[in-house]
Length: 211
Image 1 (tube, rainbow, N blue to C red):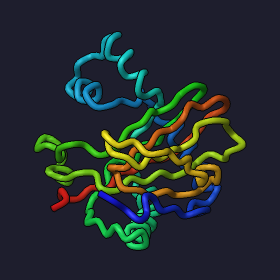
Image 2 (cartoon, one colour; image 1 turned 135 degrees about the vertical axis):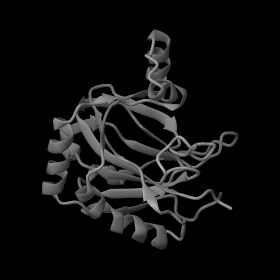
Image 3 (cartoon, rainbow, N blue to C red; image 1 turned 60 degrees about the vertical axis):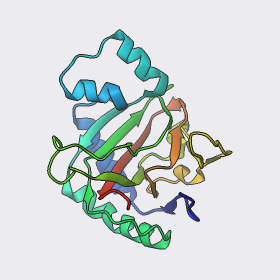
Image 4 (tube, one colour; image 1 turned 30 degrees about the vertical axis):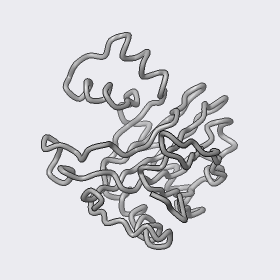
């Protein structure tokens, strides 16, 4: 799908206090290792991950996460999703947001090239609001000030699997409180953090498959 706008952003959308509140609340919760694809499916079935699973995972992703479902978080960010969807001329139909992922990138942690969307809709064993839907829009909330860490750049790549294009480092992650919205099928990555800690909040917004 060719797009005129590959992402939309709002600087200073979240106040420093709100960023602090989310970080403080997220750090009080039990964290887990961020997973990917098949490894995630295995873990969701209660199957312990073995050394080979962890080795495969670390080739793609190394981060710590906490799942948040607090209404006060959605209340703050949802208006920006609607505005971005309209102003960027995507006009995707969506009606549900997944649990928010509070993500910590510590020294040398990263998330290599990936898209947030799946190749099939969510199955019938998911909660009712997710069944048969796909991820259409992704949101990244920048919680850390750039002075708190080095590296960890958010990078977009406007490609399909057979036709790679030059990548573009998103400069807006340097400003705390920025909200970045983009279609979930856009390729992106977080480069390794070389010092400090990088905190962000990621949310995915679902709708019926494209027709």
